[in-house]
Image (cartoon, rainbow, N blue to C red; front, side, top):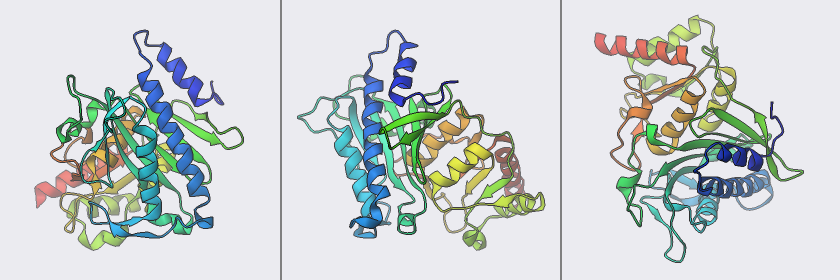
Length: 330
């Protein structure tokens, strides 16, 4: 067991497993960790400074931007743009591609992120988080284009999230298992706290916004009725990162399915569904739209929305069966 190992050392040990590695990815990830620490610091004192509440404008999704959304987005951009490891970035908060300024070198990776998932909860001290995804830049490109980011989730080289809660936890995968690190504020370092995370095959928790039940399609209604009969417990925070993290560790299922109100789903494929799907599959779980595997979807646009059913393998497969049976019946 390597519990307590600093993240920087862990990354270097992982890098040594690949003799041809240049170290660029390790440096890129180290920059990302710095951004996470800065955001964590501000989240922890948000009630003491003027950084909670609305920023008084809406983002590309038509959603009201919170001040902390704006802060987290700007922190990630400023921290990541100058390192020379990225060809471009894309944020859930920004309409198009975020270019690397000409005065900085460009690298071989692309970064996508949701800077602060669940930010409306910060005012009431509920956990929020950052979700990120890393892709390789197509060969022979200078500046990144929108098309460079429109790749199926199976092509991700890394995905992860940071939960800013009672403690700050970073969870990530590079396709070789899932590991979690907890920030020790006394030394300012993330330390290994969850090695090789495996989601239970089947859980006893379901997470869904039951306030939308009047819009549910028959497959969703059928599945939720079944899990209630089976004694599942309802747990729903309203912060995707928080709900996902709990279910990853304890087992269970999170659903934000297609419904009459949002037939194409609500969550973003590139910024939320793909990275979490990559993580859950590496931990032994599943992620689906109800009809297909999330990681196989060919994106058509930068801010594409998608239904998401994610969690323990047996639970997601059962939800798919309910969804598909009811769809056929209709």
